[in-house]
Length: 305
Image 1 (cartoon, rainbow, N blue to C red):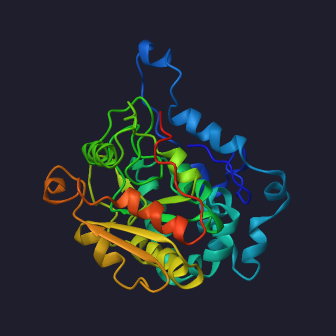
Image 2: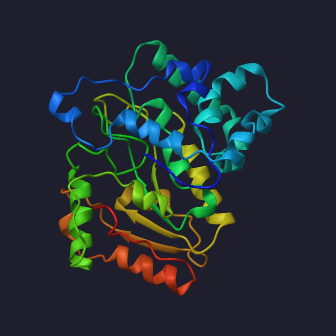
Image 3: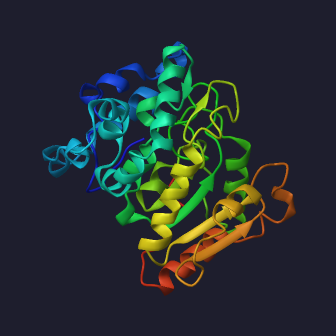
């Protein structure tokens, strides 16, 4: 993941302390052949985040947003303070100190202490925030659970690190784009950073998962947290396109104000359901039409190759 934007919180591993020090990215041995490629890996994703932290953000002290909390709370929020985009951190600071979120952080701390492998690597959980700060959000695509195998999840829903096989749902998203626009060039990778940098918030309902156990971190508090993110965008922003694919996403976005935003619904792009109308939904084109009509720059979906 990389990011180029104005208000980013520091993401360098050197700045990560206490709780964050427990959340080290999972390393997996790769073949010599894979090391010779120039495609991003989990490690290069971390470096890309570091490269785009601007000087104004470096001069801020995110801890200033939590002056009235005790040391235990500061320790529990170490990951957020050190890796979340500053603009999002400022918006979400009141949410982060609520009992449910601190309970979630204690749960994650216990999981790490028990030597559980968690995806995405903990310092990438909030990568969506750094790619797409609130002032840049034009489109929201909702996913459900991070990928739970090695070297897949990196904090953006539907997206995987380059060099990893493109997941079936994303394959179908590419197919839909090709149907909408015959000039769309289907990438050989599933890394959606370039969409995110343009203002496409790729947000999962749950932001972490135990390795090889789909849904294992569901109902621990992430859902309430991501509800708060959607609520903020719904109430404080206008003219955002929300793409709600499948019943889960549609339920999640049921309270979005359709007089302020454009809500697009369809079946999920999963191979189990995509044939029931996803390929024909035209959401990517409809999103750009709406953005243009409301004076916003369109998303260049054809930017991944």
